[in-house]
Length: 167
Image (cartoon, rainbow, N blue to C red; front, side):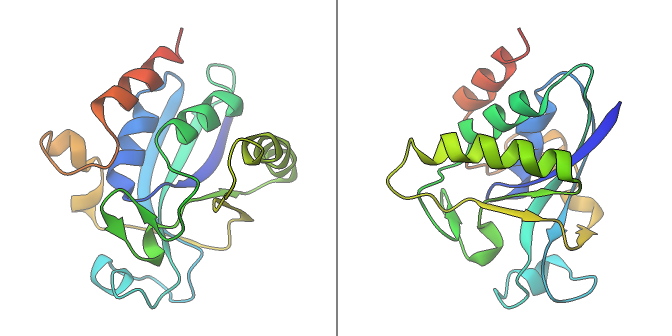
């Protein structure tokens, strides 16, 4: 069965590639979530005035990959102890967050987050219902596949750790 979760983990290029390392991911789409401006573009989102988060829509086959594994992969490549920042990317559009679309996912994430929060003195990852999502421009889609040397705050080591979750 195909399910959907939305993950904001700093720059969406790295988060998209991280999710593509998992077997069972059916599709990824990068875009802008939970802001207050309709149909924003990258330039507008980067003004830090729209409330949008750079986010990856992750469609996955729940019979192949569990939400638990997806969240493990997510937390491998984000620093949950910082607000409005990941790596060298600073601004509210880089705030980390997990956005759900159904009650089952909400309940699972709440339990997962309660355990994850215990590991850190400070914890800034949002957990909210998805309010809206706008696809990013085409040149952002699969960016690191098209541009293998492109900037990414997620390290090659972290990509390898995520691939090991497939075993």
